[in-house]
Length: 190
Image (cartoon, rainbow, N blue to C red; front, side, top):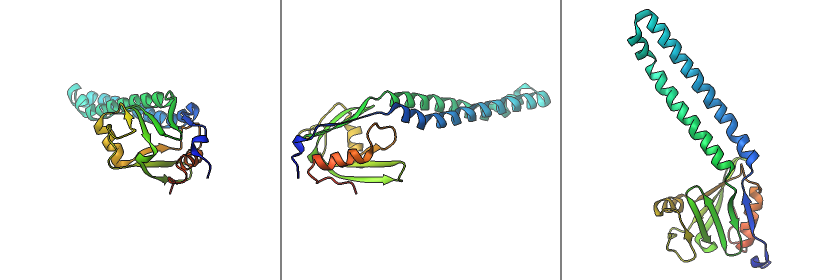
């Protein structure tokens, strides 16, 4: 096999257009449902208010107004997530020494020895690569550099670091091939 140190680093960034294509229909659906629920609440309040008085109309529409409020905050959270994901920039760098993840929680540098396996999940269109970390990985492990909180890193160590195929500027197959090449075939996606 070729020497992994001779390969150039693979830098994986965000494909802004793909992220927006993914989130826009979801955001539009939430906004439409929010408007429909709010209009239904106003209609119910008006009907009940005209028949039985203001208090009963308000009480009848209260649950729909609460649902509308939750949907508004869900739409706001989805828009914030979409904006953060679209502006993420570099999310993963692979080289001969290991991998560098950049997440909303912080950055994580891992040597290849800290990764035990790579598994694939999902369907052909929306695959997810899961990098299974050694159970002993912690912020104080040799070669590990991170500014992620210890409890978040422990959760990632338990469930693995996930990398979805949607919204990346490099195909997932290229990332998996680079992983295999940099580890001299030790980490092959299964």
